[in-house]
Amino acid sequence: MKILHVGIFQDHDLGGDIVLKKGFEQNQCQVTAFDYRKLQKQVGKDEMNKQLLKESEGKDLVFVGKGEIISPETFRIIRKRNTLTAIWYGDFRPKPPPWLVGLLQHTDFFFMTSGGDTLKTYAEAGIQRAAAFFLNPSDPDLVKSFDLRQKKSGVLFTATPYYFAG
Image (cartoon, rainbow, N blue to C red; front, side, top):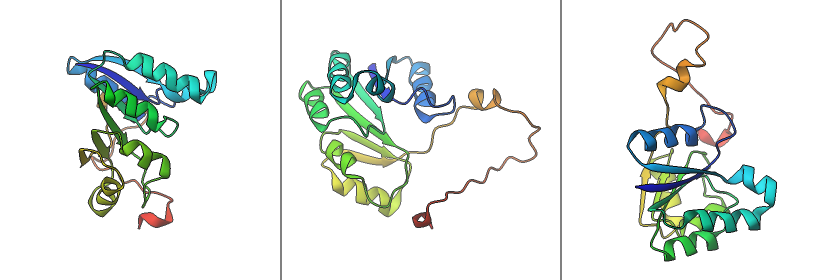
């Protein structure tokens, strides 16, 4: 499978897009990374969207991590070419942001790291074909490269500063 992985590859080694790209490659997919934020800073939003259209030609899947500056029109054109589109969204917000609603209308598969009623709210906001809960990806090999202390427990607790998260 030929995948154009549109994501954020410059933030840190443990970023979800970096981990997902590695997983695709381990499953024998031919992956082209497209760092949309980095490119947008270099050439602007319109030119980034044009280059995204060009890079998506001949791909089986355009897999997007977040995608807040990608034009819904770009997604519409990609799908019109019979290329599958997917978005994975790892931010927790009670309601879908307007930019995401625009993309969902042209998305085949939507994966979100929130489930239940939150996922249902997002799914109902767009006309995508399928929506599913998706765990935050992790890669033990990458984590080990940052392991500075002796592990004392097999459990990790995390939290959020967002008031609406409960």
